[in-house]
Amino acid sequence: MNIILIRHGETAWNAERRLQGHLDIPLNPEGERQAKRLAEALAPESIDLVVASDLQRARQTAQAVAGARGMSVHVEPGLRERCYGGFEGLLYSEIEQRFPAEFAAWQARDVDAILPEGKNCGETFRQFYTRATDAILALAAAHPGRTLALVAHGGVLECAYRMALGLPLETPRDFKVYNASINRFHVADGRLGLQSWGEVGHLRPALLDELG
Image (cartoon, rainbow, N blue to C red; front, side, top):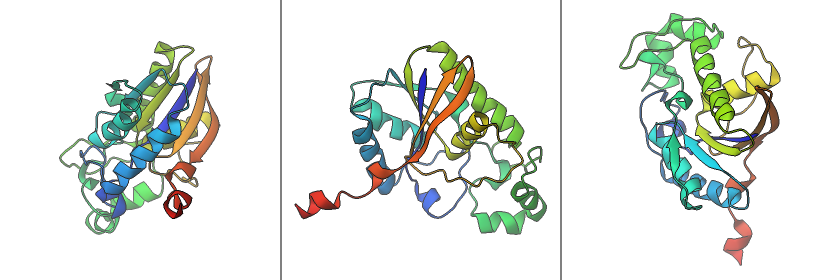
């Protein structure tokens, strides 16, 4: 079966590099534009089910895709972004100032590091990786032979990429994860494989149309 894995469109917090995690932030106008372009790009493709994280930035993006097809959006909380505990709601620069030791461990890819307490209970990267990949594989197992569009978050896309390529969790993230990007995977015998990564051509302004 095939999975089209999509990162949600841009939010105001994405634009200013403020960490969201489980905090429920909507799309900004650019994110809404991206979601519309995404839906247009996927319109010719056969999709059997659209599934989103339960956070509104993912649900809004998924609704653009599903609505254009007269489909509904199924919600899967397992596709949520990683919970960052006390980091959530802060700019990256603020995290480094307030939590220097925890920030250093995060940047050093300590996958079992405990995050500071916050409004939500933080997850280690290993815990998050297990949750996200289990959710993806469970959806695949429940819909054999189908094509699923899953709308999730940057961290979830990272987990899928690492699983598909067999990358250790401790290695640096040296690949880009773009808002409203299209990323294609297949699942065979319970194993996730990567077909293409980081399709963003659909997001570029249609300059020729505007000139015409």
